[in-house]
Length: 112
Image (cartoon, rainbow, N blue to C red; front, side):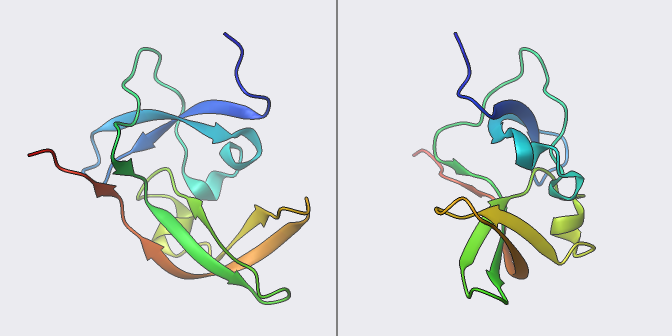
């Protein structure tokens, strides 16, 4: 089975620091060290349904565009505050730099 063009599997480390899930990430974003994506674990579990990864949220100083990006680990520069900007690709295929305004932690839906 072929992957969608431009996507690669990477590891997402949960807030507990030990649980690791596999997820598809845009290949360009996976190459950005500040986002904290880990190497894929062959045979590892995929992110479960109802799980939302942590995100950095921001706004562009030049265009006013708002956006967010997923962050692969709590040790990532984008999550710890070492990195204060990140880039996103807009609908018009332009790259925009956003300044971090907030961070949203991971969320798990609990089954009852």
